[in-house]
Length: 238
Image (cartoon, rainbow, N blue to C red; front, top):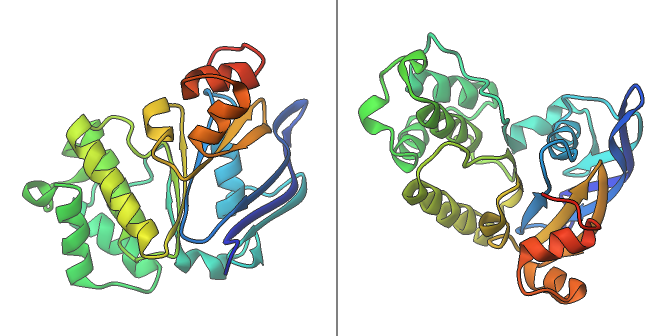
């Protein structure tokens, strides 16, 4: 499938607020696509529409060939929300195993593998409520990865983790993409955005521009991605 994620004139309105305002988006198979924009730009709402947690006001969100919401697709999608969706009174391992079982792909060896990836082996049998915020973030990522999805939707996945682990995550994201997994990752951090194959710049629910970091800088006539975003957004701060 060449376009695992596609939106067509996608809108989501909350009263007079146009959180997503006519977005046309196409994400290619096996690429890391970054949604870049300030807080309140519509990144989280767009991802929630793609995962089927919200219904569009107008337009379509098409994921793996199916119009969302569609529960049957979710076994092939890994989703990491910005706010933790973990069960505080279950252990790290129990949470990860639960999400794997929900997707019909409980494999103990894969549970062990993602626990090792996020560097939580010493805390695998600890209750989530005893973890720091950064450790909860690691557990959330493990839950999104454990069933080996074809598509990953990650909303600010590296918030609250240290630089060394962030680098590990991005190395793993790149390996996943090289293996054909498609990743859509939201961020407002410029150095992370530069690791993506392509970027979509969002502001006030609208997709202002798309392209690689180099392409966006060239189009804006700037030397940094941050300057390019400010130029394209009309001088507003990110």
